[in-house]
Image 1 (cartoon, rainbow, N blue to C red):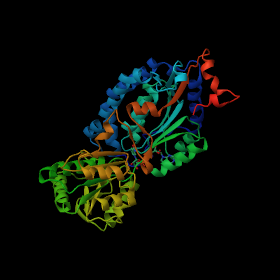
Image 2: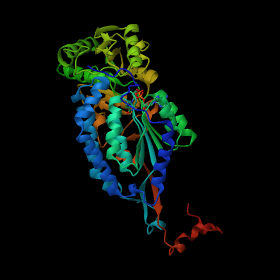
Image 3: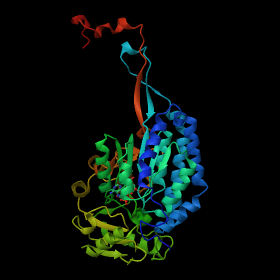
Length: 485
Ligand code: NAD
């Protein structure tokens, strides 16, 4: 594998700092001009179509860049990023005409029955979109598509940690999109800091909570609204009712949900909480799944297994494995030169273990057991509340109305999303809101929800002048006859 070694790879040219301010200003100016192209829905659709073909014609090049950046297999990039990204674009293009229609307001007082009242969703202006390295394609394309569909210009800041990919996508997107509505800035902290000094109409940040705080603070200075898509520790809760028949399927799903993209997935299974009566069986089955089914030949040269993005993250993960008080039952091997960490399962972990401090964001799966579901729930709430996702596994009914345990978890643990009996799949839904709650972020997007996130809902009333008589009660002087309550 030929991996990029540092984030300051020469493949990616940083945007000169003095170019940032005039270009952002240029986008604002265009947006406010009488000839703003984004006012035409057909223009927005053409832009989305251009994006679609820029991607469709360059799938291999995109996969190749991602392979160079962190050794990810092409099929993983296609299945997890490119296919959902293209679906999101098609979904948006096919429904945009419907979404932009104003919505009639019903259930109005009698005195306003003859007044046309409706809600129109208007573009916000210029949106800043800052994206992370881990799914750099989908996490860029989906917000950019949503923002443009909603009629906004976009300033895009991709991650500097995927230099090959960011250089390629900057070129492809800049060629595909009109320069009056799209501007890309590349670089690291100095460039992002300069970008954040400019004024926007909304900022969408996807990444870690520490930088999320920097972005939110900066945005607050100019009262700019922010969408934050952050991380967290997402548990897989395995209920005691699992039958032998389902054990292998559940183990496969959990293993995939942890180790795909070498664990660098915001909604990855971060840890397993399994009922004590089942723990030994589940751990043995997950070990078998890793060694015999999903990763039988994994090693530092395996072209189908992703590597860790940079040295700092790699060192932190290695330290977690070294310092854990649990028992490494599978994996644990590492390679410094290629930043490889084998799929690693750690058994007998407690809430205070080194592996349970922060979001792991790597191929390490701690397993904790619980006696009662109440204890498990208290553990989640007390240690890592409001996860971005939670996964519940049961052999009984998946419905909260028929399964009291599922209902108990849903009632008590607030999470960005909950999937019963599977992992990760909700991210690919084009027509369901994706986002966090509390520490895992706020506000959501995808499809219609992106359209809503990037528009302002403006109420419009078209009052008549002939109905002054009906409205006369509102004017002084007041008397008992005018009392409506
Ligand atoms: P990252 O390092 O890729 O950073 C994201 C962006 O922030 C980059 O564009 C980077 O240039 C910029 N940035 C970095 N430091 C900055 C600073 N000091 N000031 C201003 N900008 C700065 O992100 P990451 O931390 O590696 O991403 C991983 C995290 O993102 C994980 O916590 C993961 O859970 C989370 N994540 C969340 C989602 C979601 O949808 N909720 C999706 C993917 C990743």
